[in-house]
Amino acid sequence: MRIVRRSTKHSQNAETIANNYDLLIQILVRLPVKSLLRFKSVSKTWHSIISDPEFSCRLFPDISGLVMRKLGSPANKPEYGFIPLGNKSSADDAPFKYLDFINHPSGLKVVQSCNGLLLCSSSRYDTKCSYDYYIYNPTTKQFVMIPLPANPQDARIVYSLSLAFDHTKSPHYKVVCVRDPDPWLNISDDPDSNFVSQQIEIYSSQTRSWRLSGKPFLAHVNTGFGGGVFCNGAIHWLGAWNNTSFYFNVQEEELRDLPMPPIPDDWEDLRRCRYFGESQNHLHLIEIYHPPTTRFSVYEIESDYSGWFVKYNINLDLLTVAYPGMVRTYSVPSDLNYYVFSVLCIVRDDEESYMVLHIPEKAIHYNLKDGSFKKICDLDADENGYKGSPVLISLTYFWAHHFIQTLSPV
Image (cartoon, rainbow, N blue to C red; front, side, top):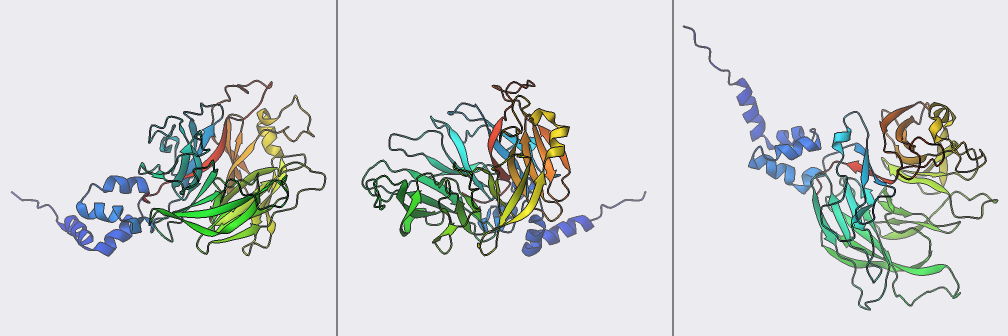
């Protein structure tokens, strides 16, 4: 009788890989993040490699989807929806429906997403106008509370936090706080001025401590310093009206004016910003001041920050024909709210650059090159609005945040 011996070729190859540390890392960095989480249990060696913060710096995951807060959900328990993006993502990849990594009495909300990490805060502030802040990794479920900067005067100081994190440069992140340097100090000579003094402090996850950065500066009271946009190593904040916008280079710790496109002469209200975000180190801006709102431009900042240029010209007229539910027929075309849509995200990619739109009950993929579009998924109807009726057409979700799978520690 012939005995068939089991070949040891595959086991020898596996042993060779297992014993070659560098080769093993080269293989692991090419695997999906979800697979890496499972493979941590293969062996102590694999667990050690995958858990190493430096290993996470070698991963380059794409955006998996968008998490969006549902309009009308309770403040103490905000509900989040999910839009999958890319060929490898599905609705099953939704990281959460509620932020319940900690049982906070006032509930938690997402303030900002930054390369896989989320800056979250309590939904309501306490008697000193302060929120509780957390850094949360929805992939690994790790989180840490961020203490607020010391306040020796024990005064009512409003803190606005933004997250700065680039895993390709460092496994550590920084949190930038903009706050009142003194609750009774306003360095404007005009007592009725809408400009107030602000101070920047920086928190480092490496030292777990805060420190002052630079001197106090003047900013308009309506400047949105909470959850800025992190791009090219800087955090960007939009000003109100025609007032100064800012960007802060986190590495150099330099605060500079961010030039903005001029507001039309016939517009006297706040800036009508419809989108402000980044993708692949490209900072984008959309502002719409005149009808028809279906035709607008996507601006991109110059690399030297000298100004903005038109990157894409958008025409959504065909989209309104395909989806007439986004038209408020009870209004007039000259109304800036005649068409119901929001720009959730702009994704720049080597294969295809596209825009994600939210129209009533749907998420739309819009190709920025040729203007073609397709439905990504259905979304819940607004419980207080549309439901298929033209009486009150509205959107269900707002404040979209990137979901990127990462192993980066908090």
